[in-house]
Image 1: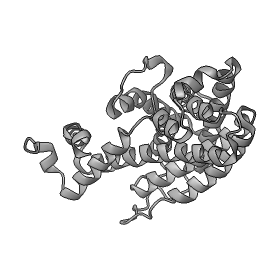
Image 2: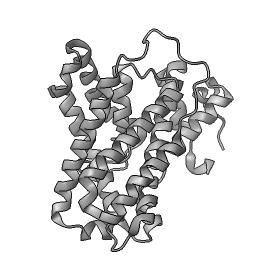
Image 3: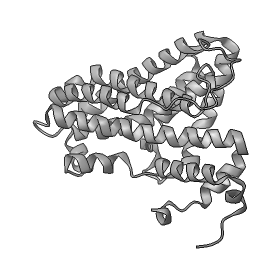
Image 4: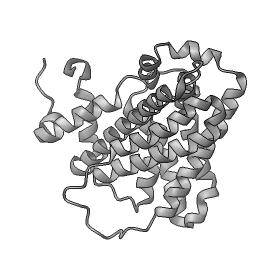
Amino acid sequence: MESTSLAEQSLSNEDLIALRRAKHELESPALAMKLASIVGAPLEKLLSRMPAIANEKVNDATQLALRKCLQIALRTLGRQDAGAAPLLVPDKPSNLLHKFAVATTGAAGGAFGLFALPVELPVTTTLMFRSICDIARSEGEDLSSIDTQLQCLTVLGMGGTSKADDDADYGYFIMRGALAQAVSKATSEIATKGFSAHGSAALLRLLNTIASRFSVQVSEQIAAKSIPAIGAVLGAMVNTVFMDHFQLVAHGHFTVRRLERQYGTELVKAAYQTIDIALDG
């Protein structure tokens, strides 16, 4: 193997290990592959069997779920002391607790299938959003910041490609870059106009961008639950895999952001790109 790059040498050994782990989390197998291994059937076949009305239901439920998350974000902004120093050793996130909670909603979804989607998805997504915020906090993010809250929301759009991507194999930095401009405009608008901007054009564009990506993942989740008599147990397993997938993305994303605050964006990006996760195993 070639000698380590200058970028890698600039990071401490501990931080390089953290970055390598982050890349594993961000470039991990697609959600569809994880779900297929749980239900024992290829997702493509299950997706093709879903009724046409399912796509409309998924899109509506996704929009509703993301709007609820945004409302939570806007309500909680400014509650913390923005001037307070971050914890030197932030508490670990409650990943298992959130997985248990989302498994409970998955049990209901497994029992009632597509009919449960309008009720289940907003609850499941809100739980995932809270878990993502918890992970962000554990990596030193300030949850009273507008940018941090929107970054938490964008994690739901980083879990996979959108229908407009033509199934392209997008890496983390390309995916993040595609969302960055929308986040920047929405952040600027809220900072200028206040919280009432939740109906603004910039925020709506951000929500639509995230929704187009998140709905693909939701469709795969619903397809995995579409097997006849899937039952509550498998429904809970599917939801747990769904939660775990986005928790991994959140851990990876906020680890990279933590390291960027310490070393600078370009240096971390250069080090990230030199890491070969295939060789790392």
